[in-house]
Length: 294
Image (cartoon, rainbow, N blue to C red):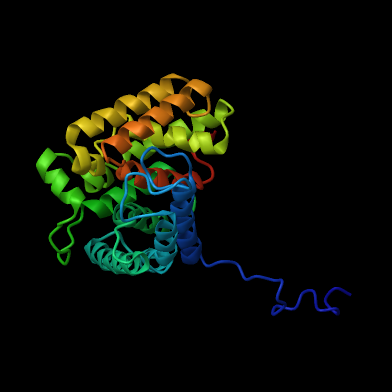
């Protein structure tokens, strides 16, 4: 009877075809960027309240940038499906990442909203597409690290603020984090996210606490570019203070978070690298199962 009435007709408008794996991975990456952007209140970062320490960014630009990257992430996943984690794939992914940067700049009117995130999430999207369906989070990040270690002969010389901060301050930056298999994601951010959930924190507070945990130890090149080691130390000490008071969801932790926000705004310093790694946490958090949610 249902078939006779048309309920099982393949063209019925209420029946959606399953999303292709590459499209699903791209949607997941975009979702991670959107959820990171909307998370509020983040210290000195763009969120629902305003632009934070940024003069050329706002929430609308971040959301437009995230959506503009969907095609590049999907093409990265398609390239990786059934491929080998070799130099030709690495170079194809690099070219797609640069296309993603151009799409980002077109969407934001020339502002760098997600250059670091394109690198981080692009590697993870490709690694997830390369990995077996039952791969663990650690196996996925090891594949991403292998890709990151391969040279891209066609990459232009790095002239970004992050690259200059790496040279000036002798830190690894986003590239170093990827080459090391994202330790601030797997050893800091994801465990902090799971621990906050187990304590009964709201999802927003759990994600804020994961961001703060990353801030407490990362040599963030965005902070270094804006304010040198003094800005990094201010971010670290402020993040540790919030966490020591029970996290962003407690009254004392909330006050300490507001104080950290004010201090970083005073320094005109934004932990953008930490935000990119939080997006990576949110992307990998959708792996099921993973050990932190056990």
